[in-house]
Amino acid sequence: MNQIKNYVVCAHRRIKSTKWIWKDTKDEGDIYEIYRQMCLHSLASARHFLEGDWEYILWDQEIDHINEAMPLNNQLTHDLWHKEPCNILWVGPDVQFVKPTKIFGEFTDFRLFNWTDPKVWHEPNQYNAGFDNLFNNDLSYHPHTMDPKLWEIERKMYNEWNKTEGMDSYNNQQIIHNTMFWSQGLEWSDAHRPELFYQAQWLPTWASLETQDAWNQCSYQDAQVIHWHSSRHAPTKLECMRQVNEALGVAPVTELK
Image (tube, rainbow, N blue to C red; front, side):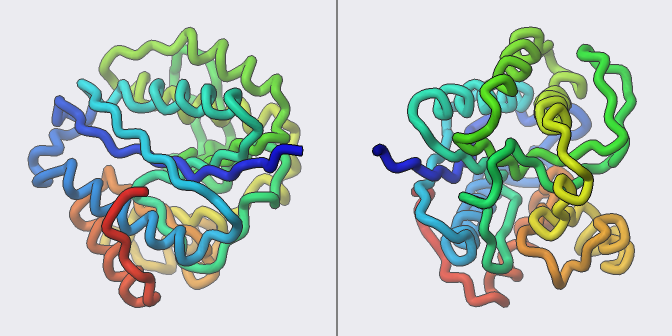
């Protein structure tokens, strides 16, 4: 019997356009290098805290615009899952493991873990989809045991994806993943796992830690994985990741492999 492989997947690409829908990243410095450093800190934290035997895959194809990234990631995830029996954990560059964390082998369903900001989503979109609880998808788990019918949902929505520049295209991947996730009929007590994906969108200085804890319904001290939301000023979020890894004694890595 073939062993089921575990993959941690991330993406770090040169993006020709510096325009990211609501901002121009050239104002934040060398964004390619900043995100490379984030990926290194994220990988180092995973090597230190993420349990199980797993391999790291980095997708690094150059693209013209940020809106090309999410459709490409969807396609590559789909192809990898169908290539061989495997469990795929997507870990965004600004996702950091801070305590021993077990995800591989823990869930048989497709998983998202915690809200995004905003938590509720009923804005106009091409899919006419709405969510009373919209979960962030920068940590997402595609186990080999997930219902294959979820891919039928994903493929239908993927093929209808409006990939033109704008916020609609940028949001579509999260809408697709939430549609897949909530179609599984999970109970809230099972679905919501904030300790596995604490959102730090307002840290370090835009809100108090108490406010951020209340938003997550989870204490920062109990978090196993933190999502720094690097689109909200990448240099600041990179420094957070650097300081946290240093404080936790995480050994640095120098290569994304």
